[in-house]
Length: 106
Image (cartoon, rainbow, N blue to C red; front, side):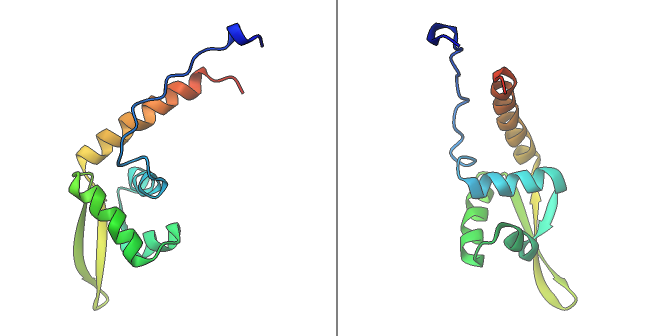
């Protein structure tokens, strides 16, 4: 393809929160499953509890997730839920990338 035949790709505005791969992966998992317990998420992402807590707090501060603590089999468990704002924001972010991918020839 000649240089002048190439389409110019415009990337969607980077959403600071989703630009970290860990946060993107957290939101992707929650977008699909709606909720997940902390330990399962930690194992899926292969993160330390402190690292995961940091990323979850950033997502929570922006209103994308909520965390509920409860007892499960007499053990404290944190369940992470995606919020409506989180669903909408992440879906928009994905649609922006999908439109770029639709224009790329593979």
